[in-house]
Each structure stands twice: as C-alpha cells, then as structure tokens.
Length: 266
Image 1 (cartoon, one colour):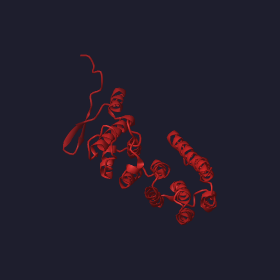
Image 2 (image 1 turned 90 degrees about the vertical axis):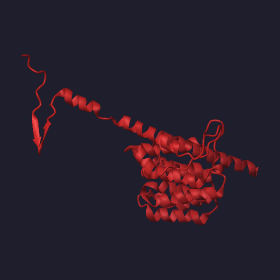
Image 3 (image 1 turned 135 degrees about the vertical axis):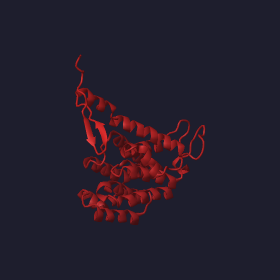
Image 4 (image 1 turned 180 degrees about the vertical axis):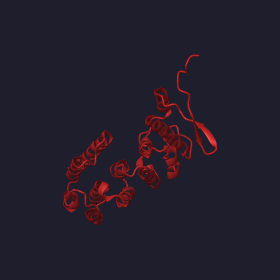
C-alpha cells in the first residue's frame, strides 16, 4: 500500500468531545494565512460600508444640481460600519463631507449649510479618530472662512471646546482660532481669552505659542498667519500632503483677502 502523502492527524481529547489536531505542515500554515483577511481588504470593506451608511443617512433624494448636507450619522452607526478601522472611517467621513462643497454643477455654499449639522459631522470624525488634525483644520481653515460672523463664531466655539480634550495635541488650532477672533471677528477679548487658555493648558506647546499675545498684537493678519503656518510646519503639526495642500490654500485665501482690502483702501 502507498504511504499517505501527509501524516494522519491524531485525535486530541478535550472533555467529552474528540477533536482532530490540524496537521502541522507548511501547506496547512499557508492555507490558514490565505484564509485570514488582509488589513487592506478590511479597510476597503470598512470604507465601502461607511460610504453606504452615509448615503442612506440622507433625508431627501438627490437633487439634479445641488445636494443638501444630510444629517450626520450616529457615532454608533459609524463605528459599526468602520469594522474596526475608525481612523479610515474618520477620513472617509471628512472626504464625504467636503464632497458637498465641490459638487458637479453647483457647490453647496457655506452660508446655505446648517452649521449645527456641519458641526456634528466634524465632531463625529474627531470622535472616530481623536488623534486626527483634519476635522479641526477644516473647522478653522475652511468653514470658519464663511462670510457670516455667527457661523464663524460657531466654528471657533467648536475648536475651543474640543481643544480642552487634548490641549498638547490641538494647541495650534486654538492659536489660529485666536487669530481669526482678533482679525475677522474683531473680538480681542475672545482672542486673548483663547491665548490665556492655551498658555495655561498646553505646557508642551512651543514657547511662541504660549506667548500668543505678541502675535495677536500685529495688525497684519497675513503676516500673523504666515508666522503661524511656519510654526505649525516646524513643529510637525502639518505633515500629510493633503494637510500641506490645505495650508497652502489657506495662505492663498488670506493673501487674496489682504489684496482685496488693500484695493478697497486705494
């Protein structure tokens, strides 16, 4: 009789049941590795499930030109859809949010957005990935740029509230919120209050950030924003290509506002 190609598994007795021990062969180990889902596939599946959940959260059917921002999904639904990949889910949520700013045909204007709902979207993304800088960057650098002081103030309040949860990681966004309060809202009391809280709560922030009042004393918003951007790059607060592009867009927008103000004075 021809000998078997692989050893016969020996029974292993546990309690009252009998279990066959798996053969310890190279092919068996390879088979188990092939059956294990890869991290890439898990992340892709999580992104697909999250995107589907976001689309199902819309309260109204698609408009042929402009879609309103749907109600933000619940945190529980997002965590379930993320399949153990909350960081990827947070990025997908932010990408889906900003897709409403750049829709084919006609973008959804910030002044037409429900900022209470918008704030909930940002909060959900930050809750999924508390280490992410993207939601706070979007609040200060994108949505606070709306030509509406009430909406701008709401974004600053959001950044201020979430700063308290992790001051040493989020100090740069409160610093920029202080600049916005000083130069766009013309609210020096709020700006210096933010500076004082940063100084008291973020001991790991660089020395210049803890002395933010000197930067607030400048009359030139563009110069102050450039100094803040340079400090954020130097301290590693902005690293990814996406964040670098966003920071460049912010500086260009600030330069455009400064040029428009100069033209008006002439």
